Length: 356
Image (cartoon, rainbow, N blue to C red; front, side):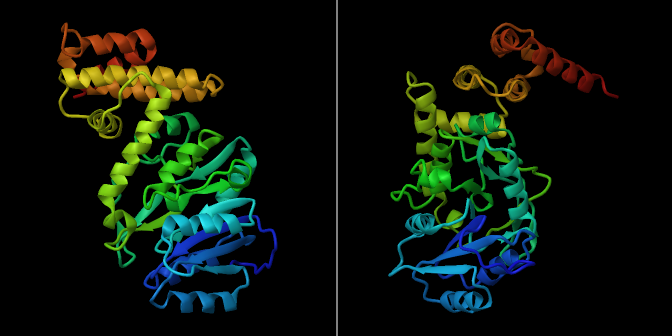
């Protein structure tokens, strides 16, 4: 694997993969690692009780390259327990995750290693992915691009996972020094739970979304496709834990968290009293998050404030800005916190309305 073939006892990176019956896409995943521009890595694959050709594919690959290490489970233990077994055996300074049905872009490992070496304050870094259909053809992607700055990532992590699992690289010291592992009680959304706990110990980042790190395959056998509702329920529980830690006086109901998530991620078409009330909740959460991270870079604080306040102002109908009641109180609350953002947003609205 790699442009140079290296045999190392302490590699720079451990690429961690767990696979069960992944023969259909595993060769492409392995090939994507063969062409990595960074050669100093080991590929640690946990073989989780496959009954298809997966073990044979791995054995043939190991004969070609000694950097592939195979851990074979006694039976099917599931993704979470398999990943934890892999973490126990990882030797690299950094651990990179890749699923057996995805493909890493050739410069993925090199870019993430370089970033972590330049930014010792950052412990985990992900990035953008491009979608593939089952046949490997490009598929349209309509999800928002991942946020790149730590403070904005923390804001988004209050409501949903700000990272793509198969793009992640993190310092192994978070495992060996902080004792962090995937929660063995979770069979999906275990990554969101882990990243949330890692963010209690370190900073996070995503690389430039204009340059995807991974080709992410969407197919009917994927964990996301098979366990979509369970993923949502577990993600909701993680969100509730994060929100409660930031604002313990509030009783965070499922309906409220889902509504806030929709506001943050997608906006809304209506803006009645419920949305106004939730807008004020978001304002309070923003202030609490900023207060909880007083050492965050001023540029990141400004960026997050303008992102959230600008989004809230964008939800208020134009007629409500000056009319008492329907939305004007939220406009006033935003203006008190950041008059500059309010004026900028108002100017943009006026320019849009006056545009021929």
